[in-house]
Length: 290
Ligand SMILES: [Zn+2]
Ligand SMILES: [Zn+2]
Image (tube, rainbow, N blue to C red):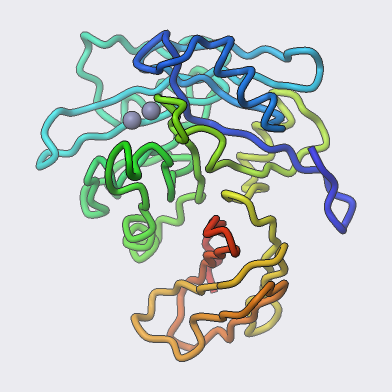
């Protein structure tokens, strides 16, 4: 937990990880300990098809209920992994039941949770198909364990941009999806703006979009007339993504930049920002419709 320059409180958390309750290498106790010791405020254990519990551990660490569901087994037809977070009851889904993505989203919602599309690039999801489902509350733009040395295609920005071009602005999230705890833990996370470290406080902030996805940098982004302004902890690069394939002023580079600006053009319909610090750690803003 920390307070920013405007006096707002932020909680740091990881919403996607596995333990020995499914295919993770560590016990739930050891996984929780690693994230606690790394300064996280909340996590969710999202073992495959095993819905965990919500619990406040020692007043300064929140465990949100979670579970990862999957649908489909042929990439040409679509394979979707969907993480449910913050459910108050167990979604009525069973592994032997071949649930559709829409059914998974709806059952997570009925149980009081939010539904996050996990690692769409790794799953080779296509926006032309995924845009047919409704109700995703977020989507991972980065999934640590999908990257090397464990796997491939960790970055889903192109998928999210393609969804945005269909007017579906999915809230941009990042998570570890830790399995091995050999460097795939405590890397990609959310900063959630909530004074209150409780299920309701964190879930409300996520639902309201009051969070950013990061691996280190902390930033704010705002629109002022025809300009997007980013203020950030020191970074070496800011890249403004839009639905235009060419922008003359898309990239700002320098040493220890704390601010970057982008002029919105007549032909832009949305803008989002990616930041990279001197250690190569990224941060990703939400989409801003312009
Ligand atoms: Zn998955
Ligand atoms: Zn997973």
